[in-house]
Image (cartoon, rainbow, N blue to C red; front, side, top):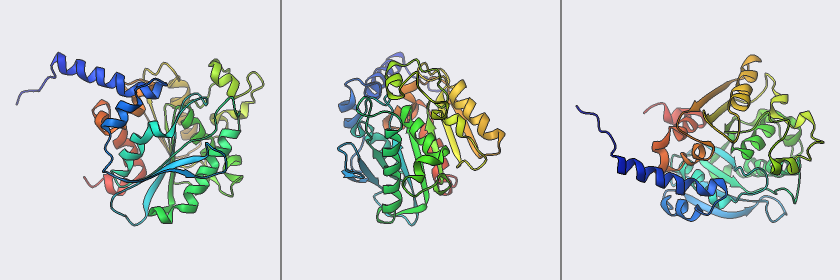
Length: 297
């Protein structure tokens, strides 16, 4: 057999599509295009469900078309340097999971400069409590609740999973989680150089315990860390590899992977089913949160 080599025109079209589809993830104006190419008939959804009393304390629900017994449930937090982001721009994450039998929630949370650390963590903890409280009506198993986030959202997920202070405020503990997934997250980023993050964390009056890497223990939930090898927004060696090694050193269950030919935004964009060809990010996530159904082929 002969290998099929994509033509230059096809490669060019793919790169152009990628640039447009990844645009909303970088705070640009391409979210309508990404939304247009992601299926709406592959899941059951509810939009704008309140998990708190503040206007941004709302989430969108994505459920598989066919109810499963004890489906896993993923709570996803998007990035944006804690200063921007909208749950509607990440429908593709909820769709990708629900289309493969995994219930998902995509949550908004309050942003800087309206609030600062740790208020956005308190919001995320409330969203997680909502997930546990409503898991049965979503057809999910309370024992299979996962956290997941990209960039600043991965930081939020990491802090809830590793630092027990935040879930304790809503009557939960990290040990109740089945695991967490970090996509291109900043887990060790002092001193803070990003101007938006400086405001969000009151730099330079930023305590060392704001860093997820400071909260590693052997009791940490099972962890999957994914990043782009050439990420120019968050240093993957310092954050992803550094946190993975710290977790492994204390015997906590962890897996990490760095992807070539991806960037900070395209890493999460590869979750969108039209962009799965970029890299097997979605299969990695599915194998982690639902190994029983993904290992059988």
